[in-house]
Image (cartoon, rainbow, N blue to C red; front, side, top):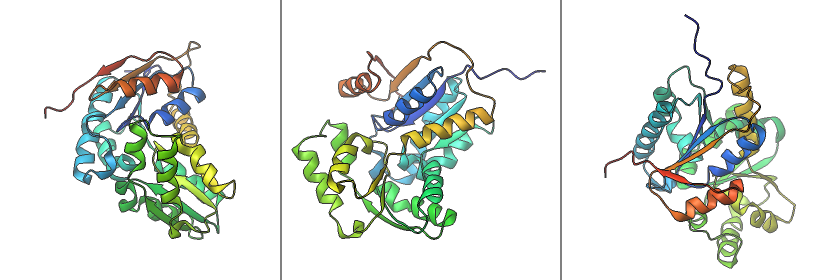
Amino acid sequence: MKARDKSSNPIGIFDSGIGGLTVANAICKLLPHEDIIYFGDTAHLPYGDKSPESIRHYAAKITQYLTDQDCKSIVIACNTASALGLETVKDNAGSKIPVINVVDPAVKYLADNFKNKKVGIIGTKGTINSRIYVKKTLKAEKSIEIVQLATPLLAPMIEEGFFNNKISRTIIHSYLAKKSLDGIDALVLGCTHYPLVKQEIKSFYKKKVVILDTSEIVANCVAETLGNSGLLNSQNTLGTKSFCVSDFTKSFEESASYFFDEQIKLKEVRLWKE
């Protein structure tokens, strides 16, 4: 029996909140004919201060939901979930559904472009404590010096809408002035929320440091993975976008509408009985 063509099925994307919208937006720009289903786990944000067991539990439930929606691939648009829940997502998605995380494409980009350089990583406590970037980057390219810094206030600050103002600038500058980041050649924004404050980070470094927003790198990886799997959508019409959250918030709806420059209606999907 011939296998059913899944190329017109949606791409499933998830994160703890609005941060993954940076990845979703990059995917939609690069692959405008693809349908997407985005799940923001707003009931549990931020993931950065949750235990590894909790992250894996959330990731398993969301993966099951996205596979139930016939998603042809799953994008973990969250560094913490990528670091702590990748194998869980793969196990729950099954071998026939490609899973793309946000860490591996970034590591490959570093290995290809920053040999013999000093690279800083900023991210949530969960991502930094996992040392996922250090382990994977040094395995791929030993000449790169990696330093990392947990910046736990940034994701909740961004979720609450505090960016591009005096409060955000003060917090960002306090973190980036830490001695551990002295002398870096590049800074990886190791949380999908952080591109929202990229201009403020760039302002701090005054063009002396390369700021790596990995959303476009991840989008390219998604396109390559789907192409290699024969899953790229061949339709000529624009793809549809569906946005789900585990707990409705007006700010998320407004942020999604801003990101995609169109009116977004959220669907609340409660996966947990708490």
